[in-house]
Amino acid sequence: MASASLTRVSITGTGLFTPAESISNAELAASLTASVEKWNADHADEIAAGTLAARDVPDEAFIEKASGIASRFVMEKSGVLDPDRMRPHLPTRSEDELGVQAEMSLPAIHEALEQAGRKPSDVDAVIVGCSNLQRAYPAVAIEVQDALGAGGWAFDMNVACSSATFSIQNAVDALRNGTASCVVVVNPEITSGHNNFELRDHHFIFGDACTALVLERTDDAVNDGSGEHGRWDVLGTKLATQFSNNIRNDFGFLNESEDEARDPHELVFRQNGQSVFKEVCPLVVRHITGHLGEVDVEPTDVRRFWLHQANLKMNQLIAKGVLGRIPDEDEAPVILDEYANTSSAGSVIAFHKHRDDLSSGDLGVICSFGAGYSVGSVIVQRA
Ligand code: CO8
Image 1 (tube, rainbow, N blue to C red):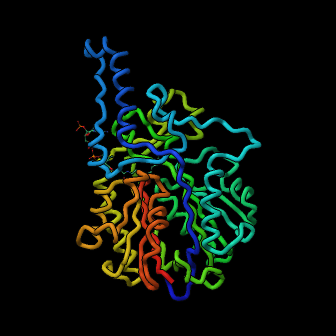
Image 2: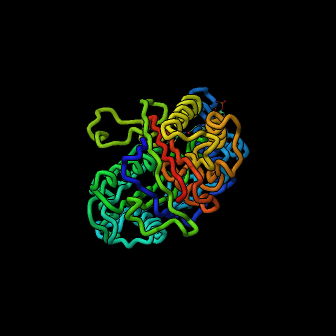
Image 3: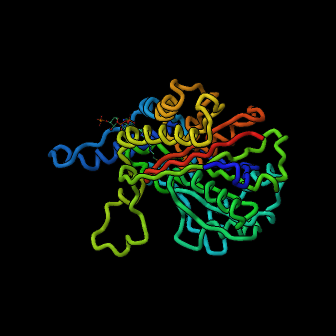
């Protein structure tokens, strides 16, 4: 919650790493169709006997109509599209090599630091927030801190799609209580490593990307806000959670101790998409409306909403609940057509790509929502 007595904090830079390879809906649907046809042929006898149901082939047109997604970037394309594999090739790296999540974090962080007018050695805290961490420990954030040449402390955190906004509140808290002076928040999302590309209800949903943000106390910032990307003063952050199993992934450190072998489909992303849609939209509308009220901002005074990018209809419904009408792309920009759902990175990609045209004094809301359930909002004003 914002208060005049709290130390002012700003977002002084943002960065984005976009993987080199992209997959269109047509390519993805063709690969799953080949896989389904092979599976049905391999199980023809059981299907004929009625002991197994034939699998349905995906429909390219359904994907864009149901979700707004036209393509997605991935760290490795050939493995995802191989009907005999349906998962990326991400070879194991030796302990001497930089990990893949640290590697994708660095270009995003360097871009954010350049916008902030800061050097890596100015950084004294690194928070990695993402849905899919590549290992238990050491923290990816500590590897990033080391590779960057930053000081201070670093930790990983996971609140699924809300990891970025939850990380931002952690950064704001650290800056206000004086435990850090230049915080990097980074969201290296390799969703393709934990998506079930064999399931037609899920295969199209996700994409890979990494975003980074630099946060500092406003009075210490080098970035005075006059540059093209501006400086964004944080008016308030608000987080909320409500338990639900509707988005779940049971991959974890206790899998090895379990007596019964898990269904592999439980160890990657799964969801009841319709329930998520119905339950999360009203939760987010109440959250954003409540947060704006706490900082005395009318919804109609918000110049732009940078919403989590999971589903276009969902975002339209949420913005309609807050504004009373469906917003245009200028008010609520869309990046999921090109990027798909990049989990925690989505709302930050929207903020990164669609903020330069705003003017000094303009207000905006960065909001993410997802598994947990979890909702996080950050109200910002261009300096
Ligand atoms: N082609 C053809 N038909 C399809 C396809 C396809 N590709 N996919 C589904 N269908 C079929 C279904 O089988 C169903 O058939 P039937 O009626 O016979 O059962 C029919 O189409 C309708 O299916 P749905 O009702 O599921 O379709 P919807 O209109 O609801 O659209 C969506 C599905 C797009 C998934 C939608 O429900 C949605 O977007 N929901 C919200 C999702 C969301 O926001 N989730 C957040 C999850 S992300 C998060 O929190 C972070 C998790 C961590 C990331 C992990 C990365 C791996």
